[in-house]
Image (cartoon, rainbow, N blue to C red; front, side, top):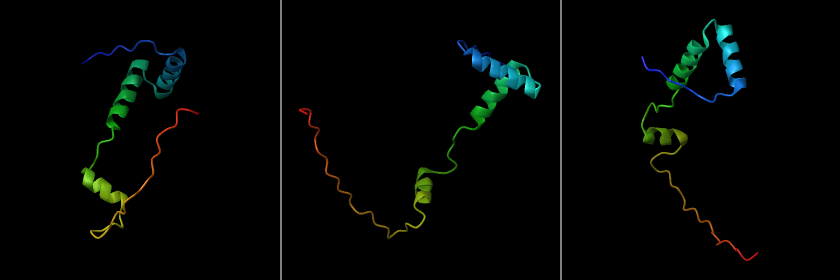
Length: 81
């Protein structure tokens, strides 16, 4: 198994990790492993393609859906003020 060394952890974080580990009946090391496992398993992995995700954002938009042109007037900044 690999090893990981984490330096410069704030004392408050260390104390909270120790309390959490004690509450869960783990060593601090095991508690950190559990936290890391949970964080990695929660990664946002799209369950479908980009087109499907975009279509879900506009459920009432069918093949006849038209997007009107959006005209925004952009004025250059005035640096003299």
